[in-house]
Amino acid sequence: MLVTPVSALKPRTSPQSVRLSDAEIADQVAKATARAEAQSQPPPATAVPGRLTRSEVLKINSTLARFFAEEGALAMIGDLGNPRMNDGGTFSVERALIQGPGSINPGMPPTIAMAAEHYNRLVRLVSKGVTVRLHLDVGAKLIENTPDAFNVIGEIQGTNNKDEIILVGAHLDSWTGGTGATDNAGACAVVMEVARLFRALRVPLSRTVRFALWGGEEQGNQGSRAYVKARLLDQQSGTRKPEYEKFQSYYNLDEGTGRIRGVVIGNNHAARPLLESWLTPVRDLGAIAVLPRPGAGSDDASFVEVGLPSFSFLQDPLEYRTRTLHTNMDVYDRLQEDDLKQAAVVLATLVYADANRAHPMPRPTPRR
Image (cartoon, rainbow, N blue to C red):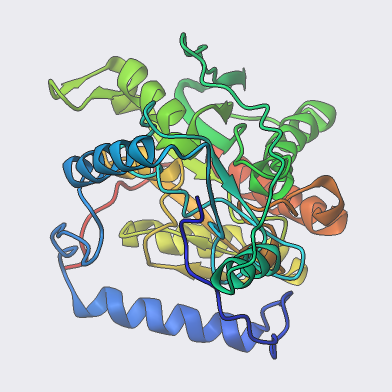
């Protein structure tokens, strides 16, 4: 059963891969600063217009499952990718009907995503009354007993303040389509390289630096949320664990293969001068900005939600949101080695400074 309309494909007239100029970064900093100064409190959480609730998604999925069963559908086929990049050989499955807050509905037939050009041809033929035959070879299966996901964690113990923890992380899991190279294996490699640099150089670290490769980020930051609950704070009960008070900072890398151009600090305005000074040694590598705005909501969000210092990064976008994010093009060949090396040096510089600073890291507070 064909489940989506034809996509109108237009020629691309702007580059798919972009590097940010210093002027563009300065403009982003100015806009983020102006927004931060305009509101002393973060806006209250509100329902996103057009976004369905979990119960609504479950109800729709149940209705669809009955409809497909009554029609005898063997499979749902559609152009189910991100419309910004689902052409020219790139496709994703971000708009599959069974995604979202309802997760998987076992009553659904298999969902097959096609590139827009191929799917459009099917729709045109059918609309002209031409009989179309498809041979489907679907190897996917629903796992009855879901296997466990894992966080991979290691640390380099500090000296004078070894009970104080600085955490550096990226996520191991990836999306359907490619192998998850830019999202997020490249960042995992950067985190591991920071650990290797510290060990190889035997740099002194007053605080303990812990390295985390998270599982389940693509399913709602499950790995980092589990870590927070087990070691820092149980949000349901409000119980703070001993590590909560000793926790210092979390650094999260998850915006593609591009080099780091700045640090995103959320509403932790008191940390801004620190990070600006720590970037001084790597400004010549292009890391020049500190932006007071929220992160993209990757694993950094798990720590923001419980009031802990959490930082993410502004990176050169390259082709992340135009070609590789959650697509069949997210493969090793799209990684940029020099950018990843730069990211490792910048991240190591920040973490080293953080691990050896004299005073505790300020915690997030609204601007007053």
